[in-house]
Length: 296
Image (cartoon, rainbow, N blue to C red; front, top):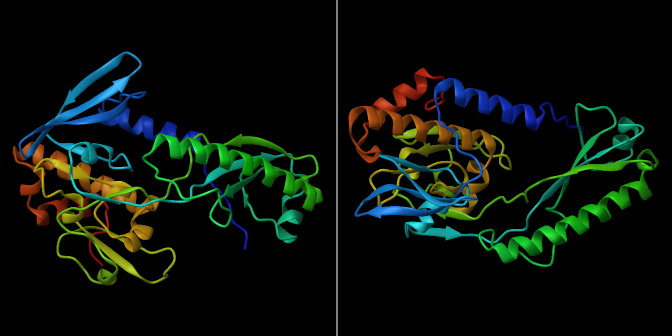
């Protein structure tokens, strides 16, 4: 089977940046969230660290879309943590005939650039052990091992496919591909048995890439914590079990829960209430009006 990568990641980042600017979002890059500022059952904001030191950003509502649950973990919210085998994608150029290499059983993706292919090192290959994606020492080991294996994979392609005889590595991903780390234990943990079961408070619907035809209705409760009234969670680290996570970690569902969390935060702010007190039916109607799929 042949696949195509139909967008340029840099253009995608630029488009998202432009959309944020047009909507009035204040962007702040090159800073990492360090600690949640806790006051009873409220988060008053988040402490960040940048090159100039630490600083705080105060907020009425906090959305943890960090992927690793960095904010809720620092606030001592319960979570589950998985160890994983990471990926490290890379791109090669100078392939003389991509079609011929694919026909010969090449294990890579075609790109929109002539003579260039994209390769996912990982999954079927293994580093020395599974890693804790929240441990810098483990991440360092993984990056070093993955980079070695990228070089070995490139050499193998040059040996086994004549079309790669003069090929070169154009780019290695800047970040490891981490599929899972922390998962929130929220007001509802979406579970495997919830497959094909509509949820009355669903704010997104997702399929499952390994189980075609299976659907999961993601409830608003899976974006909410039990501990904080004004904390929302979106993306890879929402409240689901390990098996359902394989569906909800994917880009479409992460975008959908991100839209739901952002819309809920804005609506709660306009009403002067906490997100946990927001009427779900009103939220669903607003999401549907914006084109989100919350019902079938």
